[in-house]
Image 1 (cartoon, each protein chain N blue to C red):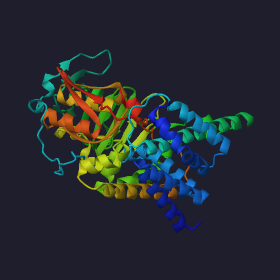
Image 2: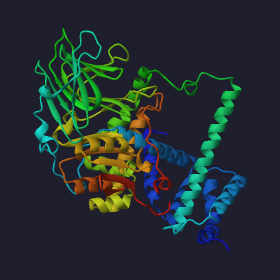
Image 3: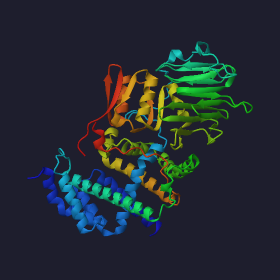
Length: 188
Length: 319
């Protein structure tokens, strides 16, 4: 007898597997990942709002984690095989001048966000920096959720266009990305 | 793929990304079907997801418009001088004389402000320095073109003299004016310089970064990256009129500034210390309103304590 979520998981298992295959995973790898999820679900997680969406999200996140760590491992192996190539990564401390130049290159994206209408910018900020859900923003501003979605859509479209225009620029992590906060860390 | 097709695909991916953010099981099923239609769909979606991962940093670096509680669209223009109003006229006469401090040719003295107090200083040259609360600046009687910010934050209004540029020292860093109004803050997170008018040069002998009106330089010190961002020049030194403006500042810094400005101790729970804040806080509001609004914007809770306030994370439903 498993937990409630494990039960839902078993009902949803083939759909989740289909998702992972659509993501390009081999059947065996997809099965392994689903097995991991099943085990994790054995620990009590408290009540969950939308169990099926929750399980999809969890599958998606674990798949992302796995892909990220595989990517890192492959890059490390490449560098090892190449005998220490002179990549940007092997020079983690560029001069402050270089940093300033790289900063300029991301300015296009910053400018695009800055140029958004005030309301759109405010909503995007609440969503991305404030970590508020679309529904919470809609409630706070007294507008519909689909209106919030339209504002966010516009913000992402503008940002995507700015980045596409700047794709030739070498990317550098010059803007220190704020720590990403998961709900878990916040539960102090 | 044509540009339009790429754009349409990217737009579709954005739509999915927003829909899934709080989507249902059915949304995910539909999304799976969309992914299965073409491998290009998956790449487009991945690109948007990666973009979103960067978006926090980008939006944090973008200049926020003066913020404003959700239900308050009135621009904040009042010059209430809520804090330290009576201290504004404090003059150099009240300064503490320290003697030469062993530096030849210098006759230095300090001007300090208490938390919650603002002090306005007019130098013999007519230049002005306004000290934010809990700040300390060191001046030299023999050289009116010099100031060292030892702690806290100050705004400078300096008349340009090509023959004798005004120099501000902040620890090992130097800021040289080229005729200007600018604001300097020194805290645990390093040095922040913002220019309202004219031009300053940051560390003339080293990085020699020229900053014009509306530019902000943040130098965390050590090996940290020097970062340039922009700010509305009207918001530079806004604390002088009871406003604190931020551009992706860690909450720990906001707390330091709030303590400085209100004279009440403000703490931040460790879980929130690195969270970023952008916007403008109006100090002139009542404390309950101020901390309540701030907490709401941050998705946090403001707890009142006997000697001040603590911002703590709001418990959330399981993720």
